[in-house]
Image 1 (cartoon, rainbow, N blue to C red):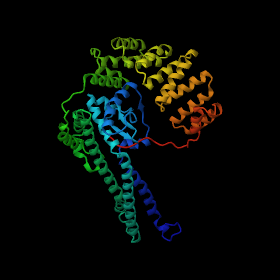
Image 2: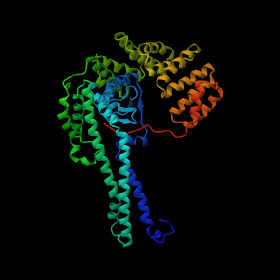
Image 3: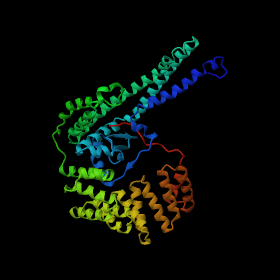
Image 4: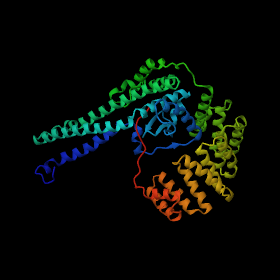
Length: 477
C-alpha cells in the first residue's frame, strides 16, 4: 500500500502487525526443521579422532555401497554433543553426535543409525526437504495474506479493535497449516529412511536387531512424554510407532540373529572408552571403568584420564603397558605422542608418532600430529620432514585447518615465504576468513613462480568471493 493512500494512516497499526506476523510466519515455518538444521544459527563443536573416524568409515562404507553411493566421498563428522542424534548434510557428510556412539553398546546399534542416515542421502531427502520448505512457505504466505484481508475487512467495518486476538489468529492460521504440512512431509521421509535402512542392512549381511534395540530404547525414554505429545506436531514418527513397524519388519532380515564379530565389538568398546575418557569427568570414568577392571577398554580410559588431568608420568607408564600388549596398534602410539606433545615434550613425541604413521600410513590426522611435533621441536633438522608429513596430510584431507597452519610455520622456518603465505591463505579459507585468505593469497602470487601449481592455487583463492556456502543440512535420526 503506498504511503500516500488515504487509508494508510488508518491502517498503519494493522500493517505493522502484518509485517510482524510475516516475520513470525517465516520463523515458524523454518523452526519446524530439526534442531540441527538450525545449527546455522548456533556454533557447533566437532571432534577429530583418527581411530573413531576409521571405525565409523568401516561401518558406513558397506551401507553406501548397498545404496549405490560412492564410498569414501561421504564421511562421518563427529559432533561434540552427548545427546543421541545423527543427521545428514549436503550429501557429503553424516553428522553423528558422540552420544550416539557412547550409548550404542554394540556396533550393530550405531550401524543401524548410519543405515538410516544413508537412506536419507540415497533418497535425496535434503533436496526434497528444501522444495517442500518452499511449498510450506508459500502456504504460509497465502494463509497470512488471506488472514490479513480478513483483518483489513474487519478494520473497514470497525471490528478489528473488538476482537484483536481473533484477528491475529486468523492471520497466523496459514503459518500453522504450513507447519503441519512440513511436519507431515518429514515424518514420511523418516519412515522411508527406516525402510531403506532395513534394506541396506540385509544387503550387507548385517542384522537389523541393533536398529530395533535403538528405537526400543528411545521409545522407553519417550514413554511418559509420548502421552502428552501430539503426533501431528512431531518432525519424526513417535518412537513407539517406529518400534511397532520395526518389530514387524526387522525379524524378516535373514541375519536378524547374527551378532557382531568379536574383533569389531572389541574395537567398538575401545572407541566408547576413549570418548568417555576424553569427554567425561574423573568420577564418571572411575565409576564406569573402576580400578579393578583390567579390561583393555578400562585401561585405555584410565590412561587417557591420567594425561588429561596432569599426571603425564602415570599416563605414559599406562600407555606403554598398552603398547606392550598390542605393539601393532597405531592408536596407542598416537596416544603416547599426543600425551607427550600436549605435555610440552614435542621432541619425545616424535618417535611414537613416527611409529604410528608407519603402522597407519593412510591416516592424515596422525601425519598432521607428527608434523606438529616436528615443527614444535624447533629443530632445523626436522623442517623438511615436517613439510613432507604435513603436505601428505593436507593432500589427503584438504580441509584440515591445523595441518595448514603448521605447514605455514614449517615453510616459514625454511625461509620459503611464498609457500608459507599460501599455506596460511588455505588455513584462513578453511576458517571462513575469506578476506584474510585473499590478502595472503595475493602475497603468495607475488612470491611464487607464475607457472607453479602453488601460484595457480593462490590465484584461485584470491579470486574467491567473500561469501562462503554453509555445509549444514537436513535430516536427523
